[in-house]
Length: 167
Image (cartoon, rainbow, N blue to C red; front, side, top):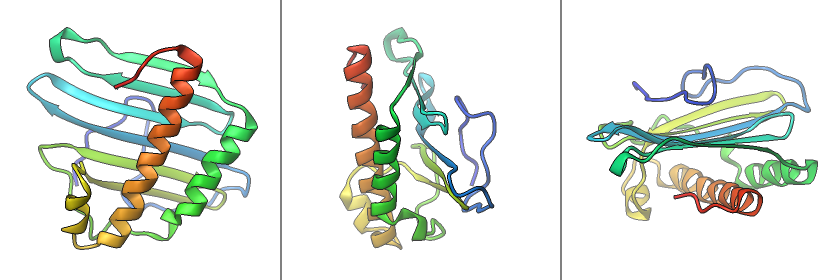
């Protein structure tokens, strides 16, 4: 799969890449985007091991500009992100049966948690109907709801800290 990526992180591993790390290591990055009529439009955020939350949103519609926000979150917030991911059991999933990225766009989720390093890539998901009609509806449903939870948390933190309303 050819993916459009990497506005925040300098490199990302290939799909379903797993490697070793230390038990206290944690990193989470989400990207969704496409290249179209208005150029490369995307939303991306990452939670870094030091507690930094980085957010970027690029929409060239009506000459909008790239929005970048960075902040540090508390250890309690980082623990909550880890709990959300752990409770979802996404690390047990595999993206081999998920829809491939296409001209509509792609989504990526990269997670490093302890000794597990996993990356997922799939097409944009418009609704639960897209999830239900996939070859792996249960795995894609886990991904879909986890992404919703992480986006909601990220947007809430940005709104509380920056007093802006991300799209």
